[in-house]
Image 1 (cartoon, rainbow, N blue to C red):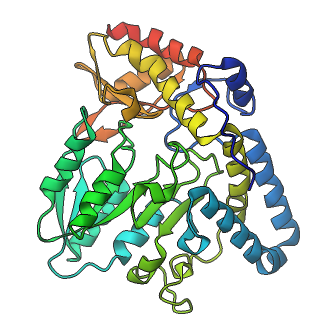
Image 2: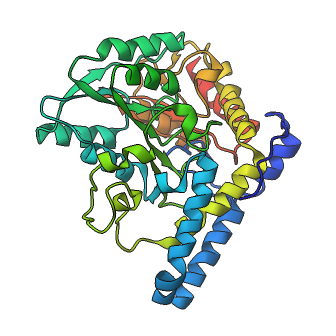
Length: 390
């Protein structure tokens, strides 16, 4: 794996960042400010993935039987090094929904256990939790996560007060996908561990978005996305289980060939597309050439370019904490007396700006998610479009 660029690059150094932007091939029909569902891979990564696919299909099953096992082990080693963990603690999954299902359905809940979740956790994760509760695996306790937060202590206390003698585990989302708020995972996990409670961490929106390594989070169970902020082509995610805890998780898919403590037992998926998996190393190389801290700072800067301007607009309410460090690229807002989808439609139809309207509690609001292929001028156009609501 190539060394990481640790030289500081100013987040507003447009001479540098324009060079990064030039490495993306994008539609010129609209400005894409909805990069949360998945991240468009840079051209070098897409080209590498295409080359991997050509090699696979040129050799057919020979490649899968004779070359792919070692290639997959190498990719896993590179991914583990990038994440700061051991290769025997990492499995490549297809997406975090699959990874969270492996953890939630495989976790050793006992009769009478309670699972603590937040009201802004990912909808597909919530569906899995509800399904397992209906099957009698646990009962659900839910905390309401506030939009506006003043301190880490406020959030740690929120979860601490919700823990009961029956709480066995917490589903925790590192970056809330609807609003972009960053939760103080390490502090919540330390508090939970002191009370004998595990954290199952959904790091879908934080992995390769924020500058950290998995051990920094203090969680034994972590799922991350690779085709969001790392920029791997669609179809790749990360599952991490601390070595000493692998035996505690039962496989979601049938497997009796691996030892109880072998993470391979959790990755028995059958034949899956190898191209995106092989491109993980290429995406890591592109990321490291920029540097994790530089990337996080640039993404936050792009968010601030528009949030700082529209926060004072009379009809707009921001749904992300005021402190810039409490969110990265993602931020959301609501417009008084207007449905979020109507705002999304207005932005696209009148200004050719693509966003999305996530739902929470029956309400739709607007989420804006710039990426490295965006520049300040894209956010300036968004601000101009939103002046209608001032």
